[in-house]
Length: 465
Image (cartoon, helix red, strand yellow):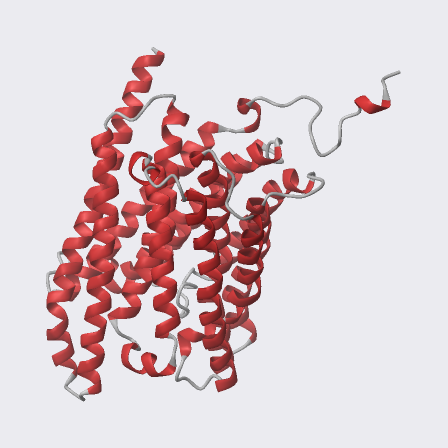
């Protein structure tokens, strides 16, 4: 009879599984490759809209390629195509390694991968055929919503299974992930079913505002921060600076973020007490973000050279700086005084690009830069191309965001001066031209990355043959 002291705690497997038993590396790579494909599709839609604004639409008169429809493809492909796929690939790497258990079922993982690609492609086709719903970020055709909702439920079940077997304290990354699985399922249901079937008028507007921002704050943000709490300590080879601050950031996000979505609809018939609440909670979130940023820079303290020597770390911390700037900008632009100037201007467009690409896409591209050599068992073909990828992406994003934010101010001043609408359009032309150039720089960075990835894959095939 075995000694009682030799019993293994149920929270830990009796024998530690190998990495191959835990992680399906092929599926991680598939998710990353799918994400990159949708990134190019999304950027193509962005270029159609950008060229339309400077009066050089290359596909003028073709309804299915109209910039209005491709603008929706642009936003949905980046959210559900690039970000969702990249996050799912990351989760298949991180959760098994943190819990020392594989996902519930690899066959379910493969089914989810195929089903999610169907959802994203079907959404794009439906949008191009004119089946969009009249809700920003919720344009997904009505017939796709139940399928996407079921997919989110399956994702939660597949990843929660190994997490729920944990006993004792969980690392903060898993806190964020568990919250994201629950919040994303509820947020998608709220945004895509409640305004469509249950409420109308200003009530639907209020729910739509909550959905727009909760999609970022309760889906993208917890997955992004959880991912950073995992990868940054590993790459720096040191623990996170303050576990206490990590919990402050988590609970601050949980308490304040769901309240701020209505700041998208200031100066509307939505009751003012809701608008004031959204303004206050948005400003509070900036303080929450500050604690998280301090925590990560405290972790980097004393190892500043890593920012230049460790490329994934550079991606991560550049995104953190952009995140602090975009949240600071947000806390300013939601004040009623500032909102009166920048409402409906390109300031808001610059803000959206800074957070979606400058922060979360930068983080995910950093993760891919770190993981692809491990997935292919081959170092990058060219470190120079890796550098070009970073500098074109980070620099192009900085120019684009600055350009749109400044252009938005000129638009607002033009309208405040009661100039004709055409005057604001003419004022915007130089800014829109700069946006095209900065977008081309970002696009060039992604081309360098994909070419580098292809050559690295070729080297890996040669090595294995």
